Image (tube, rainbow, N blue to C red; front, side):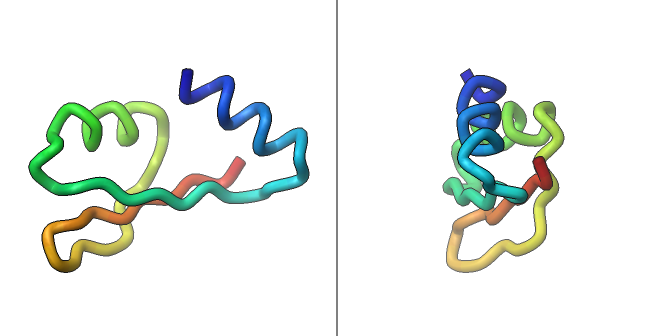
Length: 53
């Protein structure tokens, strides 16, 4: 599903995807990191990740 969304974003001309999730959602964080997203900020219980596409 993540790859399909990335493909649609890339086709629409986006160069980067930025997202956030709650740090307690370990499964989501693990999924995003396994798809190549890099953590760049943690604040107020949230983890912010990004990926160039």
